[in-house]
Image (cartoon, rainbow, N blue to C red; front, side):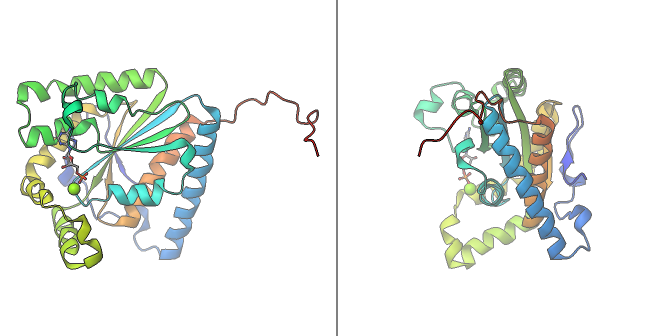
Length: 270
Ligand code: AMP
Ligand code: MG
């Protein structure tokens, strides 16, 4: 069953053609059948992640990108939260500090890529260096436009060296963002999330969409594909992300390492 939109290599992404309200195969289904599906996915995901960690051979890098309020933190809480923390990490990338700015833009991201056995979720990523950097004019075009090639080379290298990569764009509509920002003003327990800088980004909505479309078009490859996840409905967003991860891990088919002892011959002392 295919839930989200996978960007094929060479496909020209047009976000306007993908419905952020999509409920996929769940339209008309009742809540309990959706819930059963989610529980099933979560169980499969946990079991696969345990094997990936036990195997200690390959890593998984999941890039999460989205406009503000689209739910990166929600995905991390709901889908990633229940996983075994021994083998799972989240790396959050904010505006670079002085030390980070003194290096090339991939430096800080490379340092956080997964060890063998681990899954690492990038909450924002090296893609900001062709998104916010482009939209807000932090670097000239002559600098950021070369980065699509760097990023493709970087991701190719990581793949060759044993890391599987999947990249997820949480797709919300501009109207849905307005509703969610307004909730941050109206509801006292959401006010802490308010960030006036989000309004600046919202003011450049169309430029961001254009930048996302070009970034995904230029960097979706067979080994490091982009997925566009309809995210106006939080439950559907979470189901899609869980399904993408389950499919990826099932394809990797991680296994427990060979046992080097004969359990029959070992006695646990009294
Ligand atoms: P948030 O994820 O809402 O906490 O915000 C993090 C902020 O850091 C966003 O405004 C990003 O655009 C910004 N940011 C992340 N990476 C970069 C980067 N490489 N250059 C400039 N700003 C960035
Ligand atoms: Mg923000």
